Image (cartoon, rainbow, N blue to C red):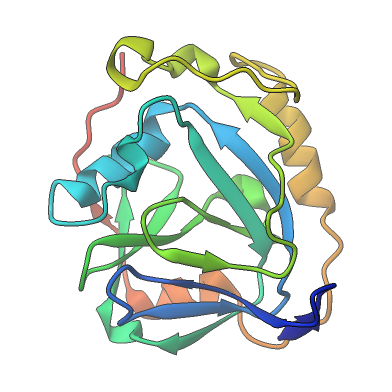
Length: 206
């Protein structure tokens, strides 16, 4: 799970919670895709955690969520007993894994990922992977961005989409991720052990 990078250092792909009690390792240590997401759901999930004592890094003005996608081959290094699963609301498709010791959102699964990748939000935990910094390739869901509450979005050189066909484009990428022979387990294997997701009760944005 370590790779050589130009500096000669060894880098392990992992996400650790804010307090360090929980760590999930990714046994394929390079990110496959990064996106800047402006949707309300990503923000509201982190806000739910922050309101209960979790990290509040996501509140920085003018910064959308940078979503990082890593291959679905994981291993819990420590703290599995601290993990719980959540849906944002009834009928929500995404399953969010939260470290309850410090309310850090650790990982997210969605049916559109085709069990190929796992998404990590910038939720205040420590995310490390081999090809850092991996640049965002798209900005998506800008129609949901509230500039009054969250500040103006900075200009970027990569494509930006309000909504629409970009989701189909990204789904095609997730579906086509070439998987390496698995060394650990899938995020779905882990989630099955953790039990049924609890509803956060966050209302759907208008």
